[in-house]
Image (tube, rainbow, N blue to C red; front, side, top):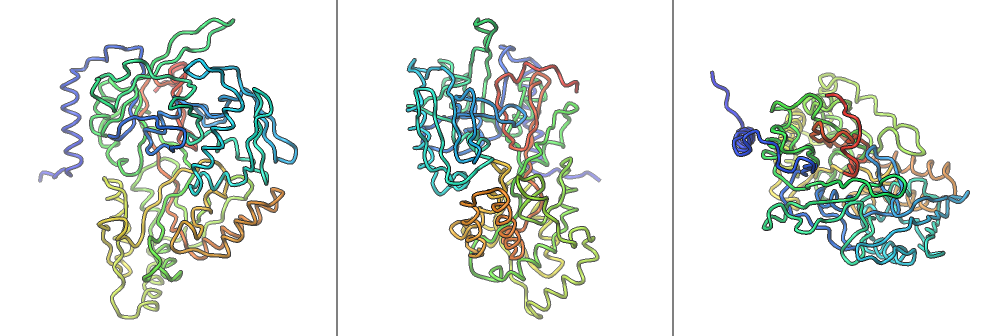
Length: 499
C-alpha cells in the first residue's frame, strides 16, 4: 500500500528538488561571505530608533547593525557594546557605563549625551510592552561626561544588562546603528529583492592595524527553499525555527549535528483569549490543564532536553528556587483520565461540553499541537476546533522567549492590563516586588504571585519554548543559548566543532 504524503511535506520535497536542480550542486560564487537566512518572507528593514523589531528577521538585522550599551556574545553572555566597561553601585540602584571611543557611520563621535537621549526615547516608546514592563524600575538616564552615562533605578535590577542587550535597545541614530556590521553599498544581491542584504565589517586587528574584512549575506527565505539551499551548501546558517515548522526539518536528510536547538527559557502554552464563557471558571481551566498528556506532546516534538511543565515559572530563574511541578504531572495520563472524566461530569453534568476554539500557529507544528489537544480534551468530552481568527478564539497560544533570567518577566505577562482573566492580588504583589529594596523580599513577593497564577491556572504551561537552527560547518562560532540570540560577528572564526 502506498503512503500518501501531506501537502506540506510534498511541497517541501518539491522545493528541495527544484532548488537542488537550480543550484546544480554549485557552491556560491563568493565563497568568503557567510550565507545566512532567517525563516520568513518579510523585507529586511532596520527601522528607526523608536520601532521595536517586528519579526525575528528584523531582530537579527538589528542585532548586527546596531549596538546597545551591551550586547550578547554567541553563547548568550553579556559583552561590551557601545560601553567598554561598567560598574554597579553596592545598592544596585546605579549602573555607570564608560563608552568606548567610536563614531556613528556619518563620522560624528559617539557622545554620552546622544546615547542618553536615544535610550530615554526608546524606553518611552516601548511603554506598555513586556520589555518595558521589565525595565519599569529605570528612573533616569544621565550623561555624566562625554563618555560616561549613568542609569538610575528605583529598585535593584540584577538582570538589567540582559535586558539592555536585547535588539529592542540597540541604539539607532537617524536610521543607522554603530555596527558591528554596516550595510554594504548596493546591498541587495538582486537590486529588486528587499529580502537580501549584504553586511560587512572590519575585524579588529593587532597593534592598532585593521584586521581582515568579514562579509555576511543575510536574507529571509521560506522554509522549503532554505532547507534545500542548506543541503546543497549554498546556505551556511538558517535561523528562526519555531514549533510551527519544526516537524519538517527532521523529515529530510541533513548533515549530522546540523539541527541545533536553543535551551530557550520562556513561555510555551495556552491562555484564555476572552473573559467570558466556561473558561472564566478556574476549575475548568485546571481540568483542561490536567487533562493534557504533556509527555506524549514532548515526545512527538522530539526536542532533546525538552521536558513537560505545568507551572508559569521554569527552572534556572534568578532569585527563586526551581518551581515544584504538581504531583499529577508524573502520573500517567491513563491513570488520571477516570478522575478527569468524573470532574467534567461534576462541572457540566450530562450536558454537552463547551466547544473550544484554539488560536494556534500555522504549519505542521501547530497541526501536531492541535491533534494532541483535540485527543486529550476529546477524551473528557470536549470538542476542539481551530479558531478562524484570534478574535474568535477561546484559547490562544503563547510561544515567547524570556529576555532575561528574571522571574518577573514571566509573571508580568498575566497582569490585568494584558490579559482578559487575571488575579488582582497577584498584580498587587508584582507592584510591591517592583519597588522591593532587597533581593530576598523581591523573591518572596514574586514567589507568592507565581503561586496565585498557578492556582488560578491563568496559564496552561506545556514546556519551554522551542527554537531551532540549521548550522553548517562554516558557522563554527554558532552556540545555542537560552536567549536564542545569534550575533553573526566572528561566527566563522572558531575551530570546527567536528560534525
